[in-house]
Amino acid sequence: MCDNLNQTKCLECISPLLEYKGTCVTSCPSGTSKSLFGQTCTSSFFFNFPTIPYPHLIACGAMTIICLISLLKDRRSLLLTNIIVLWGPVEFVSYFSQTGLSVLYSTYKFAGTSGFAFVTYIILNIAFALAFEYKIARKDAEYMEWRNHYGKTSKTIIILSAIFSFKILRLHYSYFFGFDCFKA
Image (cartoon, rainbow, N blue to C red; front, side, top):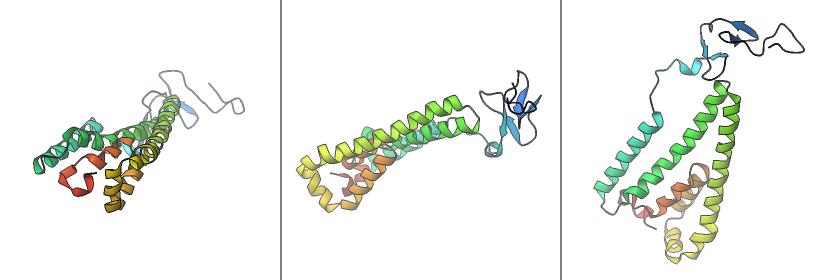
């Protein structure tokens, strides 16, 4: 399929041909690779590194080990709460990388869908952080006393939860590594 204004520029090629810089080619030139779902050649600058299979799963496994170490250090550490807290930002990274890779591979339908999900995720994180701040935290006298003592920790947790994951809010009550600043 050609551009209406410039018939010598290809916009899409019939399989097995691939679109590269407005022309149809049989294989991608050096330094480029076939997009995952599309019929285009894209820059492979980011893909000259070794592939790590299931990076988010590996990250969650490492974070689970950190939570187990926290539990071994202090038995009051809440294992499942800490796992939820540390896995939350992996969702953020997953949405972000899915959107970025969709754009990189020129799969714009997927990029639009995952971009919408990513923006929705951030909006919900902000909404949950505000709801926690105005509907829960201010009504909990013990929390407010803790917050007066650990103001910077509380603010940091709320900011991180608004950006990365509302699940980080649970860090207030997690006893992570037995630190007093996580014992609201």
